[in-house]
Amino acid sequence: MSNSVIVFSITVLGSLGLIFGLCLALASHFFYVKMDKRIENIYNALPNFNCGACGYPGCKKYAENIVKNNASINLCTPGGVETAQKIALVMGIEHNGENKRQVAYVFCCGGNDAKILSDYQGIKDCNCAVLVSGGPLQCDYGCMRFYSCVKVCKFDAIRINNKGLPEIIPEKCTGCMACVKQCPKDIIKMIPADARVFINCSSKDRGKQVMDACSTGCIGCTKCVKACPVQAIQMDEGLAVIDQEKCVKCLKCIDVCPVKVITTTKQQKG
Amino acid sequence: MNEIGIILKIFIAVVIVNNFVLFRFLGLCPYIGVSKDTDSALGMGMAVIFVMTMASAVTWVIYNFLLIPLHIEYLIIIAFILTIATLVQIVEMIIQKTAPVLYESLGIYLPLITTNCAVLGVAMLNKDTLTGETLSFIKSVIQGFGAGVGFTLAMFLMSGIRERLELADVPQCFKGVPIAFITAGLMAMAFLGFSGML
Image (cartoon, rainbow over all chains, first blue to last red; front, side, top):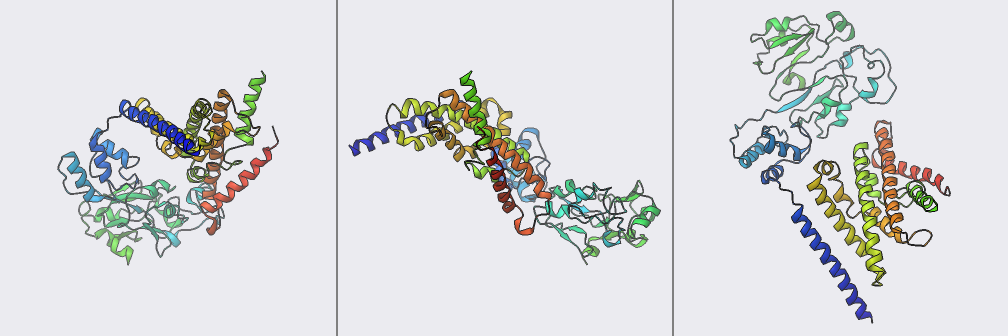
């Protein structure tokens, strides 16, 4: 009796499994979606961080866009040159050996020098603080130091420097732009990784207003514009902006700046 | 009329009163795991509604036309697991071929549901209701659909609360999953208020 039960169960379940297996096999044959082999190979070569630094939503989409829409192969920041070369191998094209690495940078050096108008007691988050009459600072372009950018960084690439300001460590930054999107004041911007000279201010206010609100802010005196030998610095609505492509790192602008908002990387770290 | 009334009753019962997540505690892993933001919670919810409805229909046929005539009801669990896993795989393939847009939005959640206990639970409860009778085909499908809707409701509420919790000033040791567990418990207690409604 018990033997026949076991045999019966095995037969029924076995045939059930067999039928389902056949169904699956047939389905995979009839509903087979042709995938480009190259997409799979490129996807395997990518680091699979899904950080979005390339501008596409995730590694899968980037791989698809390389094959289908001729996207540039050197967009993967975390993978670097190595990944680009692997992709070049799959696609059968030459890789010029150079990746345009971009890193984020905080364009504010106010910190304790920025004048505080109100004592904000709410949720400790930049995007919340900015809702209360544009934040507690007098300067409309200053970092409020609630560190939403630090919280959003997946790669631990933002530290807080001795002025209490968030500072991005270029070696760790993958260029995913999460902090750029998070910052309500838009003072985190992308710069080439080889940039060395920075104008650490985003204020487009007039000189007197800037001086009222913060002791270290660009007052728009245009001294650096005149001092630059290669015309790399331009005025943009009362704020000096460096074109990093043109900058030759002669550091002449640093000497002439009356408010000392222009720095090089070495000074920042020291 | 009476029949429609019963169907409506089953639907409301399974969505609110006997909610699968908050009353029966089935499908807790996606409930905690995928409820971090509203978009993915809704995507997961839609996939679950879809799979639960399909699974209810197919397992009803398997149970009534295979297991009962052959007198092997004791194989119900393994037979249902086999059926549901196959069903989800086939449905995934069909969607990928025929509706790529739908696949983009549901695709990543479908494999997650293959072996979800809530789906197996709805199939088991169709044959073993609280009143002890086996449901008819239409009622089974309605119960499956309703269970999916209830699951989506719980996921949606939870994800909304968790999005707010991200901004709240929660003590360091409660940040993240611990506060989510406490929230889930409080939500389950709140849903207990519905018991005895029907």
